Amino acid sequence: MLMNLGQRDEPHWGASSNALYTEILDDKDGMFSVQFDTPWDFPYPIIEKMVSSFPNLVFEGSAFDNVDHFYMTFEGRNGEFSWQEGDYAEAFGVDEDDEPAALENAAA
Image (cartoon, rainbow, N blue to C red; front, side):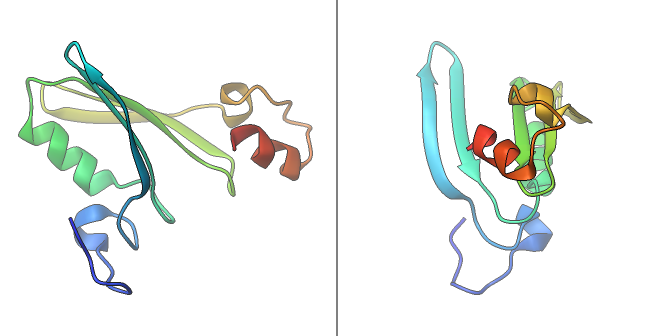
């Protein structure tokens, strides 16, 4: 999904621009793992579309936001997408009483 600079793709992607820093982490033995950054928000529309388009595949993942200290896990099975909010401090091994800068550095 290529875009012109400045073009917003929120109706399809769910974020203000395309994925950034995309990296394939694993592609073997029936497992495909990819990591990417998106500006502003989790790309619900595209993930939901992938899950519904490939109901025989299992999707699992997590997402986080360093600014708002938000963490979530998600999965797609049998064409159905679901997610749940997780504990940011627990996910990144930091104490909730830490200063905000320490929390951001832990997730980086």
